[in-house]
Figure (cartoon, rainbow, N blue to C red):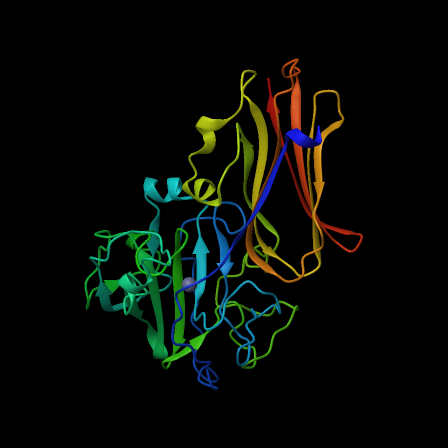
Length: 339
Ligand SMILES: [Zn+2]
């Protein structure tokens, strides 16, 4: 079996998009806090996900408010991502998070994922197509990376909380489909997930957020399995991002069965295990990965095997992906394929 095993890991590096960042210095103390809704019509953790929080590290040390690594150095906002470019192409509206008045708009920046070759093209326009909205009491929100030609508001327009201001795009410095939301108070960046946290500090205890905190949906989440499925051969992180893998689901004639996952927010020390179980209940391929030496913002893994000479057995194949820290299980995902 060993020779027919296909395995590969891919690591996603968060690059580009270094924005000017500074922490609020007592600015929000006496003012009324801003109450925000999500900039997307979605359920966090189900059909949208925070990929990067505000960097609340000190110096060259980056970390999110929860003491995790779901951020990168200098990141001054929150990245609300959608599962794939396929979903983005269907048109995902971006909404004003609170009542306010549009201060500035930029449109006309093309939609294209950032690569090292295109970094220079977006210099000075890292936010891409964006909107800045002024709210009461010195609060301001900024929305980035919207689709070219999608922005529906103009400077001076009054917008109501929840009104559509554009669509999620791929403009500016972005490597995945998302809306970047920066919240400022009197010009200083505020982390909407931890508005009262002291500069440069972090806490695993979730405090109040600026969001309407119903049902703990704004709980910090890491180790998120973002995409998963079966395909008929090797798969790249880019193909997973495109979200068009449904046409590659293997059948009885396929030369290979491959299971893939893409996961966000892995932590240092996380051990990943990935296996495909055959119709008779035995693993037909399994891989145990070494505990991670450091955190990973995003990681794609696939595991699979080529068709045996006698062909595929009929029945149900299942894949099990799991993450553990020491001996403690932290997350897992089962998924199935039937011939
Ligand atoms: Zn961002």
